[in-house]
Image (cartoon, rainbow over the protein chains, first blue to last red):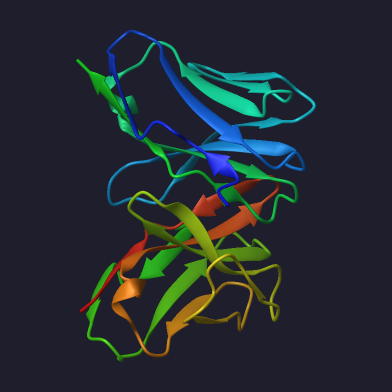
Length: 111
Length: 110
């Protein structure tokens, strides 16, 4: 039973355009959501998060949107840069000590 | 300040061999975690430790044991390695609302 779903395995975007990475969850008890970025041969690094009491959180080029009624969140990267090419994991939790991760999506930003 | 370190970076084992993956952190965090990452499977929690001396099972604990002897170190042991345990293993710590990951150990079991 996959509780956090990233249904698209990959996304390719032109440099300077917007990248939109989607994530769906099934457990309505989740109340905190995170995005992690992972380069090859490195560990995941925290990117941005959002609490269920908010519907948007912004940090520079990165914005996360949360739609609780649809159990959906998305990560927007504007403008996309070649250095953004990585695997992005969506994660969700009810108790922050235990994260449930999605399978990840590979973003490729074309120069 | 090295953050989270893992040793070894790479390891090849034969089926049935045992080994211990080491994780250490210098951030003085209480909680530590072991994950495995497999292609198309995301990150799955093996075991975690909320504090020194305590450990709990995660999503995929079978075939593994852990030890949290002190606040800094959290080890993962494979007593009898199986090919299904071929994976990349990540250790992580928790501060506030964020987990911090080590660089990973790539393990191949033949």
